[in-house]
Image 1: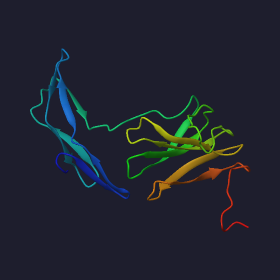
Image 2 (image 1 turned 90 degrees about the vertical axis):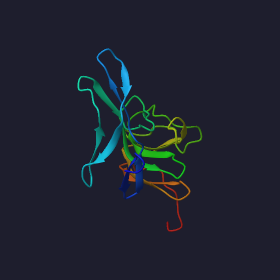
Image 3 (image 1 turned 30 degrees about the horizontal axis):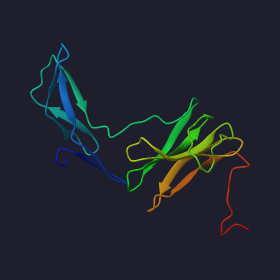
Length: 175
């Protein structure tokens, strides 16, 4: 716990949760702010501690959601991987059966091609703008299950395909 924030060390670096905002709601809907803090309950667990509670009032603890959004179309969509770049842009990869999954102008592929297509999408730091969004796939079943970002934020995507026409490029080692 650091200045009221909870800092969790992960393999990808620290994750910092701001101090929680908390209040009580009375039976008539009145609200009253209460002090709340994170409490470590072991090496891999945490909880919240509130003092001077009114037991007949509802307690609301908001640990500080940074942002949230919906991604997808009218079919099934699965996000399988997420990475954040140095500017806070979130890149998400997965697979979709939605033919109306959102894509951006100039994307690598704006057309759903098979039963399932992989997708790669980047969102602005506030989660409100599609920086880019593309399908990735061939005529059958394709999915992205992992991704990594390099120092410049370029995405490398891994996954699976059952499509014989999956898009590829010729590299220096292809013959």
